[in-house]
Image 1 (tube, rainbow, N blue to C red):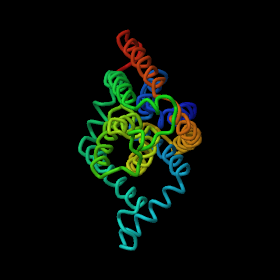
Image 2 (tube, rainbow, N blue to C red; image 1 turned 180 degrees about the vertical axis):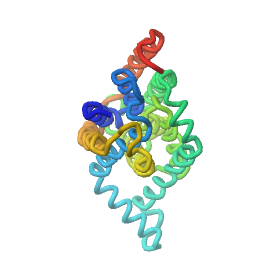
Image 3 (cartoon, rainbow, N blue to C red; image 1 turned 120 degrees about the horizontal axis):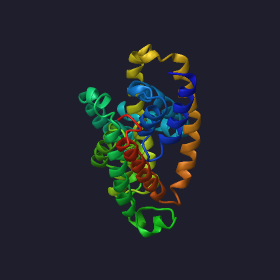
Length: 286
């Protein structure tokens, strides 16, 4: 991997990780289109995501510290497990289980056959429809930019249950397929279950932390020397992913308070059509 490629892929990762447009799809497309490679490979992608997840940790630092503190106290029996922050700690653990199990069971398939641009293009299109339908479930008040709460019929994170946490986790696990989008999958699942956009996005970002961090650390042992990748390029890509990713989180959390996901749906459809065209014409390797 060249330094220029590392810079581009780091910026791409930061720009796309938190938007419902699939960062793994963009890594694959950029890699195949401009360098005729795998966008750094699945291991590089997993490690590069450590940068964007660090951005999540920094952005939600106070929340995360409070959640961990209260969760630990609940384990020690010093606070009830019904404490809101302790509950969130348990629910993040519960929601992480599906992607952990499926990621390990299907690891070879995920890192091999699924990294195919025909699959990626199909998922970009299919999940554009899924996100559009999920977005349409949001009631009239939120559609027109009003802050949503229980009295308007949508749930907040105070209403999160173990059952919903598991379903959130299953939606997140779909992101193992390039083109789905971790945020797109989990936020869509949250909207289908009746949560507000802000609540669905917040839990989506918190839920991603253990899965991405564990995956990235797990892949660190394989990436050094793989395909000529050096630690310098990886470090540059990861730092850029962090900086750009932090800015995107800050913007996105403001954006979803007053806007729909419609622009992202249109973008996914346009990208899928472009990708199908490039594949049919043989301009890009699947």
